[in-house]
Image (cartoon, rainbow, N blue to C red; front, top):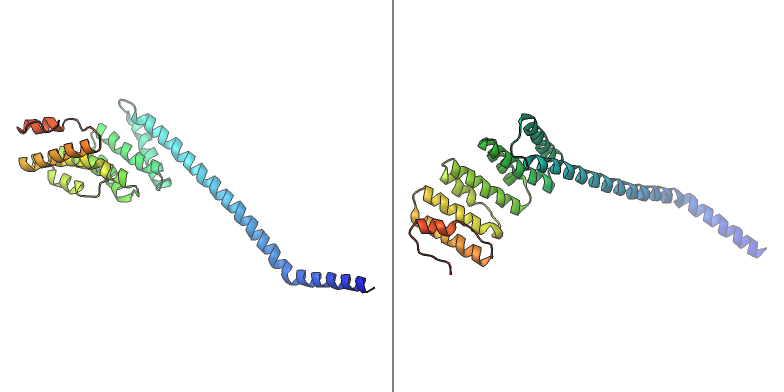
Length: 219
């Protein structure tokens, strides 16, 4: 009887404990399950977004590979760029889309649109290398528009070390456009030095130095 009473007391204790704590346990379990399912749903959503961005970028890449775009193809490209930058703005594909957009604009003779695309990339991308690449391309466009001062200003922005030789090369072009032959010579010499140090050949720079009457500077 004593054992039975003890078992009954234990059962009553369990019932009381469940009455006091059971609801919170159930709620906790539901919340935990919701968290697991919510995280899985978020992961699936993110995967879907990445796949959609990749597909749209591939479509844009295919369009940009054509020799010339008719009006319909150009509109399709514009729509893809808009979708990538608005719906996938934080993705790498959005940054690459802006670079392609600038190239397509140049091919179409719309340098203003090309500059806008590059400036958007510089302002909004979290990726220093792509920002630097955009600055180089923007500086070239500014030089082509006879705005060497603006090109130098663009080149003064942050540009990663792997692009330093190209920056020095373009800087030399800008200085020459402004009539400063000595500054151009120094910039091109720097470009050659940087390209040799990084083992990244930079073609045409020595020819520019030769045109200034500078002796061969490479071994």
